[in-house]
Amino acid sequence: MEESPSDFRGHAFRVSETCRRSGITSLDDDIAATVSPTMSRLLAFSPSRLLALSVALLVALLTGCSSSGTTTFTLEQKAPRLVSQDFEPAGKSVGDVVSYAAPVSRDGKVVGLLIGTLTTAILPDEGLLAEEVEQRIALLVFRLGPDDTISVLSDSVYPVDQREMKPGDPHVRAVVGGTGEYIGARGQVTTTRNADGTYVHEFELLK
Image (tube, rainbow, N blue to C red; front, side, top):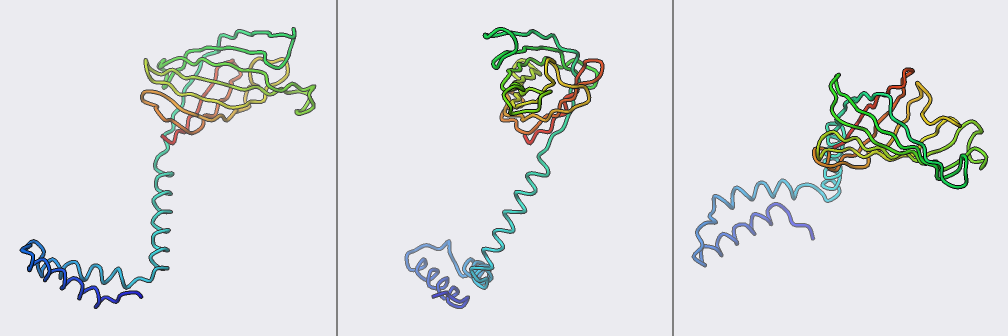
């Protein structure tokens, strides 16, 4: 049975009297009188209304966290040094790797180094992709300080027989972690190759 506000006031009075008989003087009529109206107002809400209010509060908190916790910044990258590794069988095959490295800048100042690998995962002749492209797994690490890194992992579609992405064709990849200043980083980075061989990396981090 649901208690009414008057029932609660009776409970508060009995608790106060019990404390006095036991020699406890910290709970007096003033405290009981203060607590009683507050609890009375809470008890006036039905269980369904309390549940609705709780859900609304949770949604508001989650929305606030997602909208205010995004950090954006852009890194510029010079044309990379590329090294291809041709694994057996000879010639283009699944498992071939392209390794690369290049300095990265922010607002015109060099702030670190990008290192990464591209591993061929699907070739056109497998019938899973269009004839003019192949799919690779991209792993990138942006080292922006002695202990500050951002890790990126995703798949990417590349033109056949090209070690680099098509100019002007942005690739969106997942930020999966980091260290130091970027510990626990998550979000995404949009990478675009320029016509002169340089790159732009636009980060959106949730942490």
